[in-house]
Length: 426
Image (tube, rainbow, N blue to C red; front, side, top):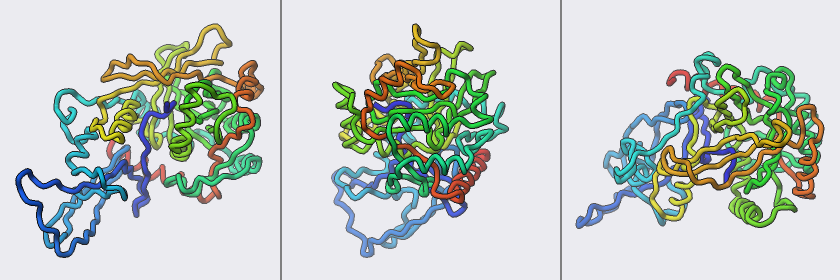
């Protein structure tokens, strides 16, 4: 079951003006003939050429309609949807939009219920704390990871190639793997950034194990982020060396967990998730100063104005099975709940709750976020030993930055352009 991630995979595209646009799940559509009427004759020249202009918005895109000629008949470019090679289940554009809950007036395709879209809890931070900039990620932390340090740590890992899975601005990203023990040490060292680390609540300093998680996610460092004390919100940036996945099956996995990890590996879910994670930020929205309970939200491209609905992952799987369920029918909520009876800040339940609308009553996929490296960089027992026994000899891999400093600067500029476009629409 997906863990911290709450939104479906998106493809980032750079326009000629270097502005980010998010295109998601485009499918083809062929207009179905009206009942009792013969199908139209094919055009003499069936070639279709299309061109559109787009305007980037915060987490979406707008198509400025134009027209092109197809067999001498005017066609609106906005109605042309590019398909995947398999068109056996192609649908019309209208059917596809209705099935996905798009442009249906805030209700499902039958009109019987309202579709759910969560409102980001971090919206107030944008104007109050970030001077109107809606994006917060590794690229605009108060202090960044020194390039020399990144290169030094990167040399300690064996490189692996995920170039076929990544999207802009990470086309020149680098990835590496090493042992579980070394991964934990490296992650702490690389994400202990002077000027950032000192401002992070002590509970979140260190490296955590995804204990009981049903995917290949293994370790995460929460200590690269920004703490907004008055608002009781912590925003974690996905930074180089901040997240690690198992390259294969952990030796200690068994039962349902082993089955879930096996499915994730066979479907390439784990690798695709890893490749798509850089640039995503996560917020922990606490309800009291004790920091014992928070609602967890994900923010694609670090966009604090928007968050995903975990329940849409259920709808996506049902659509793949041929069941026309729109986004917004099922909902989900992820939480961070401190476990009592252990060292404070060492074990949190990562609750996964599912349902319909605001009723997230069904719990499935929850696990325990367990600290194995403490705030001082030392192994925290007995959890550190338990983690090593669980992983065994299975190596872990992680995002290690960029091929060169120029590629990193290009990525930073990417987000600066995206932030400028987002400001215009905020």
